[in-house]
Every structure is written in C-alpha cells, then in structure tokens.
Length: 433
Image (tube, rainbow, N blue to C red; front, top):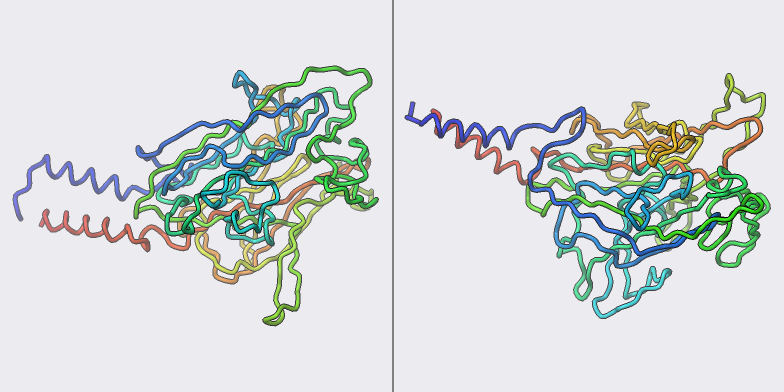
C-alpha cells in the first residue's frame, strides 16, 4: 500500500463527502455555498377599497446570465416593506413569464405575443398557445409554499445558445390583486362574482354569458367590487416583492422541465394540414356549484373534478405542488397505473396576521420524492383530480385546479457531471491502494 499522510486522507475524504452526500429526503434541501440571492420589487401599483389591478410589467429586474434558478418567492408589501394581509389585499395570482425581445425594440405592448420583435418562451406544457406558459407563479398561498429546488437540479435559463441572434432575454410579471377593505361580500369579491362587480362585458368589450357567474372575466384591471354603504378608506401604494435564489450554471447542474397541468384541460381533435391532431383546451378556471342534499357527505359537499392527459415526454419527478383557491381541499396527480405521483393539500390560516389569515389558503404542501423514485414514462396518461368543498347555500366561482411539476429527464449519475465525480472517486481509490 502506498504511503498517504493522514492530512491528505482527511482532505480526500472531505471532498468525496461533499460531492457524494445525497440531499435530505425530508426537506428536499442541500447546502450550497454558491447560492446567490436577490430581492426585487415590481413597479408600484395603487389600490383603494374594493378596487382591482391586473397589471403586466415587462422587463422586470431579474438575475441575468446563464444561471440555474433554485427558488422564487413573492408577496405583496406596502411602501415600508411590511407584508400586507390577504383580508386587506387579496393576491389572486402572480405569474412570471420569460420572453426574448429584439435588442433595438424599446417598448412592448401587452398583446405583442406573436410579433416578430417579441417571442414568448413558455414552459414545457401542457396548455395551448400562451395559456399557462409561465415559469413561476402562485396566489394567496405564496407565503407558506416551499419553492426550493434540491441540488443538483435547477431551472436553467439564460443559455446563449437558446437566445436568437439580435435578441435578449427578459422577464414579465403579471400581478392580479383585489383590495377587499370594506367589501360588502369579501369572499364574493375574491371569487370575482360578476354581480358584485356590476359588469356585463369583459375587458375587451365582449358580452359575458348569463351562465357565467364569476371569474377572471368579471374582475379585470380597474374594476370595482361592491363596498358596504358609506365605507371610506385610503388608497395605498403597494408592490410585489419577489426573492430569487440561483447559482451560476455549470456542467454539474441537472436541468428540470416545468409542466403546468390544468384540471379544466380537455383534448380537442382537429383536422390540420398534416392530418388529424389533438390540441389542449385549458380554460384555467371553473365553477363549483352549491351542494344539494343528494350529494351531501356529512356536513359538507365535495366537488371532485378530474381530467386525464398524456405527458408526451416523461422523466423523474423532482417537485410537485397544486394551486387552488379558498374552498379547495387538495389535489392529487395519479399515474396511468393508479399510483399517486403527488398529493398537495392546502393549509388555511387561523388569525389576522400576514401569512396566517383566517379563511384563506396560506400554503400548499409540496412533494420532494427521492430522485429516481417517481418516474413518468414517455406518453404516460396522467390523471389530475381537484377537490373543493361547498355548502347548500353557496358554491365557488372562478376556482382553479392547477398542478406544477418539475421533471428531470436524467438523474445526477446519468448526467455529464457524474463522470467527473466518478473519476475523482476512482483516483482516490487508486491513491489508497
């Protein structure tokens, strides 16, 4: 056996430990001293009692370069940076989208999608065209929902090879918030019930169907929800504060793909120039009817909505979480064989402080399966189930049943970085022989 000093043995053992230590299955976290973090604010928006903003802010502050995003968190704050509770300003949703813009173009319009100067870079599925194409996004549950991505996985962005010549990568945030101070029906305002907003046409001037009781069509930008008679309150300046964590890209990062599934999605068959094909039809939201006695389960009524969709390209599930509105009781994603891929359950607040607001969903449970333990095969049909409760007197309008999945096509030992780690261990073994 060759002579090796104890100091060298300790150093080599430390290197092996750092490179080979698996992430914690309980938390999905690993320590990474190379993680960078930055806190940003959206442009200011103003809200008075009962008012609504649904703003699209382009070219927002965002980490630049070829990087791997490890987490993205957001919340509404006031000018002093204080967290604003949901019972004052309800955060219906926030989404962050990626796009490429020609370098010589200075201004982008809201509906510039499809223009040659502006190219959306959507996630990997599943909805049609520009529907649910965001990279990040949540709603009222944002403060209490984990978003971190365990090492060595990450959302890789800023790759120069993916950005067309003459373009640059930029980001957009959409913030939809409703001020419910003094609301005559606070829950109704957050569920965007059309009669409370006194609207019969959508934001483009198209008549709203009488069968449509509430949802995004009725609480668009600058609409006003009904207040209790005589209520007065100040207009406030607010921001979406968002925190991004990332590492610089290197060959050891294992990329993940972002899939967003929608329980309202139905596959539509159409005749194209190349024969018959199927297209997704995601409607984003749906209505939960009030409960009849015949459907009552104990003291509550459970509305169960399901859809089954094939995932064209599979992989290993790294992270999963659902998005629901108040009244939601959880979502489950099943594999083709009936196995549970991920179950995500809401937690409801019990107080008044920000992050614990009574009656609101303040967090969603997340799934961090041990890498390699949950695999979706190419073309596997997945079934998404979204559950909501209702009462005999009241249903829910404008609810959502979305499911975010992060999927890696390779495991770390299948990735290019593994060869380095393997060769290092082999070399250490050679030294110790």
